Image 1 (cartoon, rainbow, N blue to C red):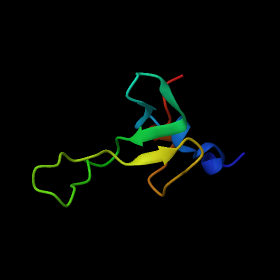
Image 2: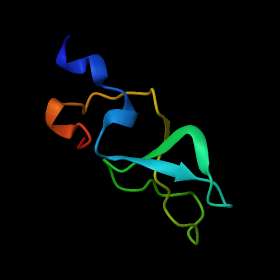
Image 3: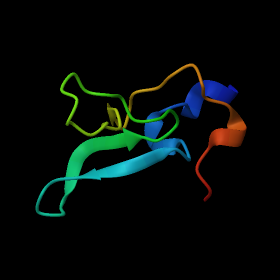
Image 4: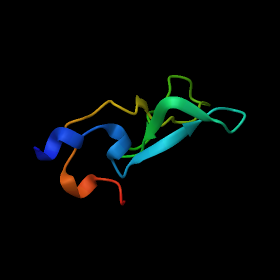
Length: 69
């Protein structure tokens, strides 16, 4: 098995479960905490963490970034 076979966002230590307004976890979604929040066009808007699917992946993955088991 190659090191990138488990490169899904859900297995990354920077993946944070995304919750809806009621506090329930969003189905198969999470927040990517690797990079800082993305700014929004309106000056009074807060930055937002990128929402990713649990099975997404990116080029930042390394075995050291895997979530603790």
